[in-house]
Image (cartoon, rainbow, N blue to C red; front, side, top):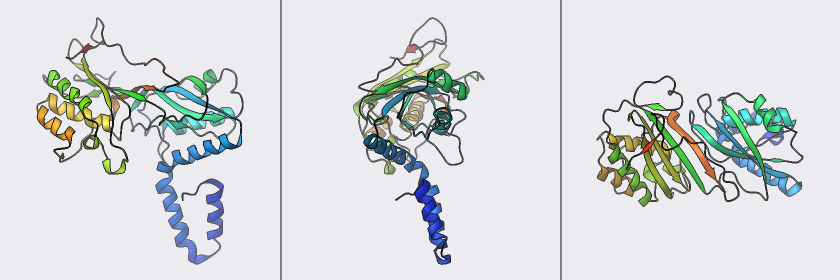
Length: 324
């Protein structure tokens, strides 16, 4: 059992009473540090459930967006800045109480979110002009768009029925895009073969071959609902958009890397499908760079807000044409 807070400090004081228990104390300290990240969400969820059982409180879903460049992902990490930690500290400063946030997923370091949700429970009414005030306290790369009270105890991650990610690529150096898009020097990529490979994603549900750490994932089955490639008129910017009921660890980035291998002729369509079907075990799993990946939409049965993604078509090079 992971110890935290007052209980942890009490146990530590008890162990300090005798010299021969110092090794056990050190064991507890090491394990607390080692497990604090994976168990933080569990502790927060337990705290929220206890609050609901003991008090009459309101569960709120918070809609936000952020640039992940300066953060080590969404989830709180020891000795590394995270979006969750930054938000919790701002909420605690404004509300004058401890706040636990549970996000709709875990984005990797450097990954962005145009639409993200987290939940927190609050016992009283929020201060007036709460969204305005909290945004004044948050850094410029995080923005709160709205707070939505919900009935019951829905879960920010497990109650979501659909998510959409977009991955942006530019093929010519551009300092204005380097933080939100990935530079790949592609010469005449085969975009039709790339889209043909993307179409195959809808035919399979086992994505263990497209997971960074499949042995650590209990459920590797995902239902991909759409996978579409777009390009601008100059073909120097690409956008890959994928929607599924759920995603597993780094699945999007592994898929993008494989699609780029197809586009550059390093991987045939038949080999791509062999990996996807599980008939071939890849020698290695490589990930596309994180800065091009954006979570753009999360959908709930009770909450479905418009996506902030870029329009699909238009009349200049910053708009997208669908690759058939």
